Image (tube, rainbow, N blue to C red; front, side):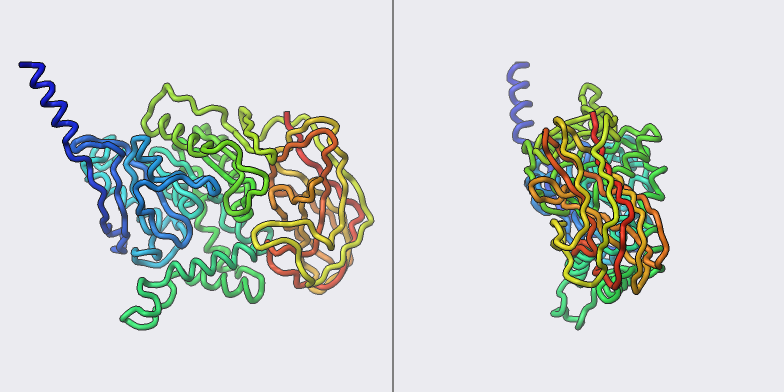
Length: 501
């Protein structure tokens, strides 16, 4: 009899309906309507509970609606299907001002979008599928790329109910990423402004029955798009607005386990943004790991390596810190994919240096003029109009990982005197390493000046005989157009690439 009862119980369990996917609209703190989608963990039966991962979309996009979406190798994004298959509920949403949500786009503001996510967590806490740590406090992790990465930082800083975050291709500061050294990113700026305007149109757009509808972007975003296109500058008031968004100024409040994934070929949110975030958390003893892959906001030209590496890192991190399985090993704190498409790791970042490749040269003159810039909209390419410094060939295999350094002593004259030149590292095959160019501010007032700057971080693998050269060019399409006319003479150029053990 007991055996028959047991069979009946098992049969009923197998036949029990699984938790249902559903859509909802949540009212945020200011009554803004936030459209969301909930997907239960794969195989979750009625009455069972699981941890939940909130997944935010990229800039201008609506929340994912495919419960079986797959991971995106190019961008490092983890699919809803992969998360559900690993035993997590997934909640996605349309950020305010985008998709079917109401309100104005405030660019992952801690005062707006972060509070919207808190409203989603309030809703989640009442759902029968959500595992709770206590009443009103569901077990919550976050995942997402770009705009969906940025929201994780500010939400974690504001809402202690978030247990773990895994921000992908996100930023440390919207000022240093969009307006580095006072030079606006023209290439990405034009793209972001275009898709942002389109994505923030009121549903129905120009055909809306209420008549012509304007974009729902915050005026500071719209102003930056206009001033950037017309003048190549970000107004001080707009810069202050972006600066207030963080997360750099909020990182001291982020105290939960964090996996940072960033793209070596990302020319919008470069590796430096991840390095700053990692350093802040690491310095305070927060559990943190950083993974550099080939991809992100850019073009991977050197191979993406073993498939599924980033997805595996994210799922492992969530298993350890969201499911709280202490037997799970998350591996070394730092992993990187070099330009030979091979994964390597180190105990920490920065990796211990064992030397450098260094070149010193001088007395080279560069004309400054608004001529044709080098590069594409989102990737630097070797420049024809540039001064160069050849680095010595590697004497043996060398891991080049981190930020090169550049020191310039220069003089020159130009109208206007304050401008930028752009530095990039070109390898022996004729590719700009990581597709990166770094703006270097110069003052061409006839006096002699010295400036020292780190260049954008890179991950390269040099074999014996591999050669590199520094290029300094007056303009690149990655950044705003050159508007000065004159010339600069470099009395001394010193560049150094970090070689690690």
